[in-house]
Length: 283
Length: 265
Image (cartoon, rainbow over the protein chains, first blue to last red):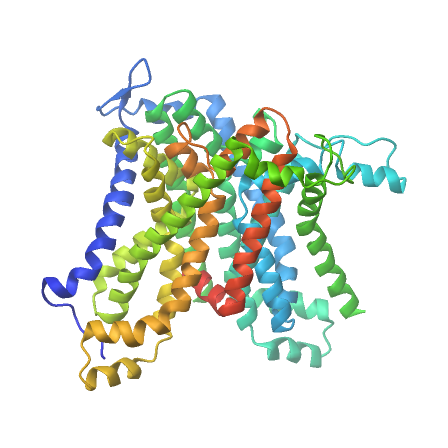
């Protein structure tokens, strides 16, 4: 049965339901959000149709400027640390036996799908004073008394790397598996040490994938919402936290929508940057 | 030496990944209501609490219902679309494929806020079914990707043979395509199910003030202090999630599936 163009209503029937669902429940809500970002807020939590730029102008206040800068900084830190851990890790599992690979993949997928709430709770327990890792250090004799490591920036970073690292591994995995093993073999035959082969052959061969992974992990981290709240102080709150706060608790939907639109623009800009960079590198 | 170092590195990452789960599991067995590790005493009371306490049980039921229905709706959207894209030459329909992948690539808060403004404007805000639709759209990417991969792996000469022997489109679909695609339907459903079960922000923004799913309940409980039931719920979630992916790996080709997933990004 060859592929043919669809003719008549009956042959188009299968695409109608999915098309309708995606249009009504993705395009329309998205459009609503963009529209609301230009609406004017009224006292009491309602908003009226209008076209004002005041919601966007509020970004220029130092408070929101700081939150934005912190969100970007945190996302960059998370992406870089995740990549540093994930690259050698993925390389090693991609070269291991199939059964081993599958076990690791199941573990990584499980952690990736795990609720942010649960990851946050687990890390806050692990870093707490009563049940945390410092108790272990005390027992070994490295510390005098157990102490709490949450809330703090280190805790936020650790929790977010925990979440983003499996994601980075899964983005890297296909290219690492497909990587021609003869490349490293050739380098080894010519006298390179395994580490040298890794740095001079494997990494350069994968540079487009590495950049793509870095940016994907960055966008992933940019969306983090619960971990900064559970593991950090209010000064560690990200743009996502602020959007939710404005929408639900300050009842300022237009401002929340404006921040969301801004976040989309940042993400889209980065995605196109990735595509552009990978095209350029391939050329 | 080289082997040893690579083993050591894998072990360290493994410890990093396992540590929080080990501690939470230990904490969930505590006898008294305190946060202590290693656990003091041994009790399965906090696991029973999920089913005995009406509040926790209601949240569990809400979560499972949401995951079961939204994953089904996600598959119902993805299956005809993936089939159509495979069966017909229709470049314009690629738009819908793109739309299906978009919510998953954007930061989740965007989709959540989009739905919040949409349901608030249309007057349905707070209805339990609004979260079902929201999750189905949010996670439609997963069955769409697995099914697209599934269709691409079908040998077209099989369907051609069936058509030559007089089977119409419907018969071909029922007798040839569906049996071949079924494992991909199941894994797509399983992916969407697990992610919906664990999802927080979209559920919170659509029905959070009316109904509590388990992740919402855990977060709310976390604000008011600590109860070991949270640890028990976490252990339950880790177990269910790992079991589902274990089954996908057992019955499907996980490395191939992962390859297909990221080439779509």
